Length: 189
Image 1 (cartoon, rainbow, N blue to C red):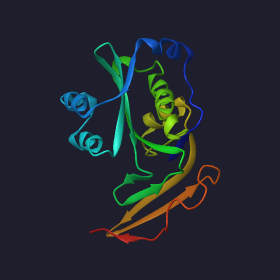
Image 2 (cartoon, rainbow, N blue to C red; image 1 turned 30 degrees about the horizontal axis):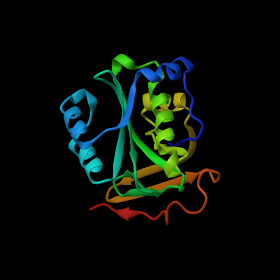
Image 3 (cartoon, helix red, strand yellow; image 1 turned 180 degrees about the vertical axis):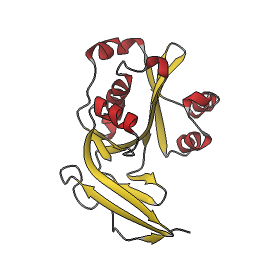
Image 4 (cartoon, rainbow, N blue to C red; image 1 turned 45 degrees about the vertical axis):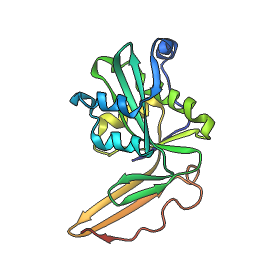
């Protein structure tokens, strides 16, 4: 499922409490330190993407405790999955990975991080977040809906032997122009 966020939902009490939390884009050094905790699900590829200017990670801290994070892909050609990329509209950025630490779940913090992300990226012309949620990942889909994401399309990837087929359906109001060049099957090496 392809989803987009233009008008984030935020729980009012969470928004009011946001002044007590630290939100910032994590440095490579900070991500290297967080990577040491397996529950945070940060791996070397994530750190390297920040180091190489491919992505950024917005972290939220409660004192010195990580509350959660959300990652964005900085290129307009967004990596969706191996062999599949989408050209994003100029005012959108791909939000591809997120986590809320279990002790902080249920308070609307992911939605608050989306608000902060859009606030921080607005000077760069970003007004919308785009995401890809596996249709079998119901927990993630519930979370993005709770934050205010709406379906804007569907990507179906079917693998049969050495052939991969993609089928892409998009809402025209989100995607003007042509986000992909073709829908041709390709061989998998």
